[in-house]
Each structure stands twice: as structure tokens, then as C-alpha cells.
Length: 135
Image 1 (cartoon, rainbow, N blue to C red):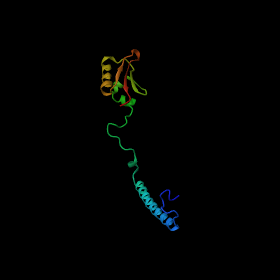
Image 2: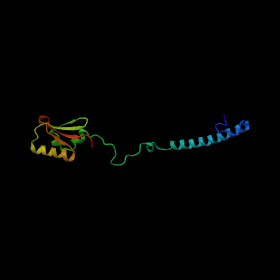
Image 3: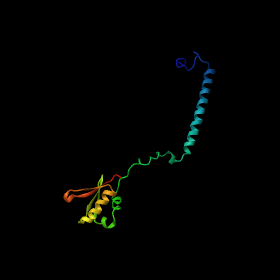
Image 4: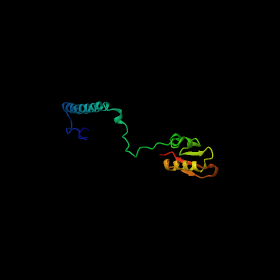
């Protein structure tokens, strides 16, 4: 059996040959064990932050979702007071609480479009401004 595996070339190895081979294997295992211990010690010395996920290159970081507070901050206090803000899974909807008049409507439309990248949805009584939650 030993001969088939190429482990020993002799048909009937002596006990001395087997003991020598065991000693050789124990030496190899000792070296491997020492290497593993050194690697283990080195890893224990590494700070957890070094093992954390690698940093994401700028511009590829995951985008967070916009909140109502984020959108409200884009408006001056007097205009924000005229509006009702509603959050859905994909959008922040902005509806008037009162009649806005053409001047206030234009100011709000400008902020929604230019600062927030949103749009006006004309739907009769259900008309509203819509801003994507994705930034």
C-alpha cells in the first residue's frame, strides 16, 4: 500500500524508516504550526478598522435617500410654511396648504427644479411638486 502511493519505495519498510519519516513529518508540521501562530499573532495586532470593508472611491459611494427635512431646508421659512410635505418610497411630494399666487408658485417651482432636481406634476386638484428621494 505504501508503495502504490509513492510514499515509500521499499516493499517492507523497517520500523526505523517509518520512525524517520514520522520525524520528518513532525518537523514539517512544527514549521507550519509556527507559521500559523505568527500569522495569528499578526492578525490579533491588526486594528478592526483595517479589516473593515475597503473604502468606496469618491462618486461611487452608496446614495442615501432624501428626507422631508432635507427638502424643507431648501425653502425659506415663509415659503415652507405654505407647503405640505409628504414622503413616499420614491419621492417627496410637495403640495400647497393655501393659494400660492403666481409669484410664490414661481419661487417654489424654481427651488424644486433648480436646487432639488424635481418637477411639477399638473393633475388638477391633485397637482403637486415631486422631488426624487434619491440624491
